[in-house]
Image (cartoon, rainbow, N blue to C red; front, side, top):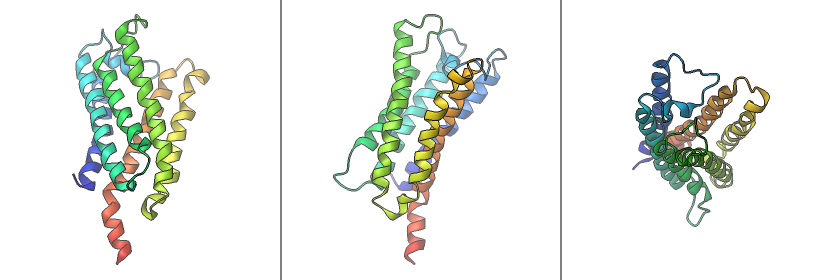
Length: 206
């Protein structure tokens, strides 16, 4: 696959995720943006739960993992650390895992809920590993150096807004949406850099 094809895969992940989210949320009048977790669109008792879990989580996760290979291939040199690749690939795969096991919000000790939580939590942890270790790899090329600050900023903002429920316990779900937004902004930004890579290098070399 070419840089542009990998980049398009990266762009597709957040588009599919948010499009599916807004369509499914709009079909449920009782679903609150302020208080309901995103995963509740695919909970055990949710209508059309597999639509959300397969498209919103599973498909999005696979696209993120595929994008991770293209990004790594074009940023790192041979014999570089595999942590950036492993981090983003596993972030996508664990997101897919959370779609395979619907959350049981009425019984949070159930096996399916524990596996769903494992997928969600691990997806985020591995994203942080990938996002922060990429900064070292980006320093090695002139083109990717400019991506360091925005990438690190998006990663840090997911951490900052991760504390939202402790500050605003009455509207905890808002913070989750913001964390997802910065997670996907990291992907969109780096997909854009990947998409433009060959064109900008050619322009610079003229």
